[in-house]
Image 1 (cartoon, helix red, strand yellow):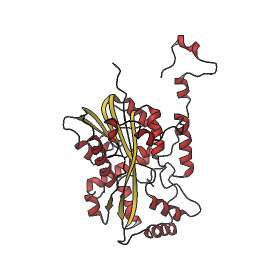
Image 2 (tube, rainbow, N blue to C red):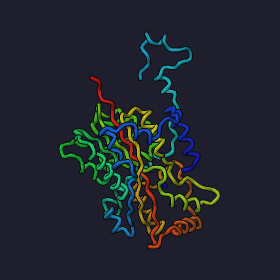
Image 3 (cartoon, helix red, strand yellow):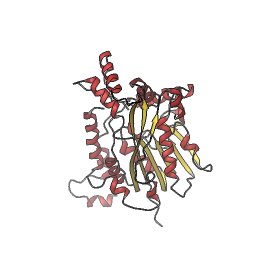
Image 4 (cartoon, rainbow, N blue to C red):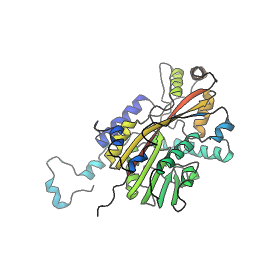
Length: 348
């Protein structure tokens, strides 16, 4: 996940226009809005999960490893009003922040490294484990499930044996090849889980809307991905490397409040949004960058910026090394956003 502030601002402006966001409720309001069994899915209580993973070498790391109004209704439109479908067609397209080609190539590289046994999967395993823990709070089995981005298979394997599970991914090397910004095939589903992917889609509101539409009535959506506050040490190292002319190297990141507003506007029932995180110890900058590439969470920006020169790379390595603790390891932070919500049940 190695973006410029301009790209982030552009995305935020489009995001606000499309959803007509207002500063009504953030995640805190959503989490506190109900205390039903569904809302207990919020991350082992409201406390943030904290732990640390040492990553001293590859061997150890591998172990952690609406429709247009009817003709009779058109006269009811006020002068100057535009039918909703027409307004949607004229809505601005989302900004192209990420490159689909680079994103797909990154996942193919990850699959190749996994097959050779040289890839770590720390983030994927942490996200999968957390999602399974959340489902454990629900006294419910899901008969038909779509799992997107479960590159380790840990989440799908942890579901009830009676569930019919479709494994999918942007790359066909990890299951059925899908595009999260297009209608999802095979629905409706009782459960849709997206793991580690939505931080690099150009149309996040659209992707979430498509998942809601693919749910059966009273179905559950859960999505986890890297959020705001991730990789602060790497960000500082890149800023030091670029000096007075910073280049786009870190992805724009979504925070808890924005995600909470988004879930409400899209129409999920009983939405819950929370953040949690963990630390990983690295010996040097090169190990961190290598592990990010091995997990397909490197830079997939449409405008990735120029490669670092020799002098810039030395500055980045030094800035990173200066953060080492007494044991020689640099603790890098990974923040994760988890969104969950239900498809409204049919009224009887």
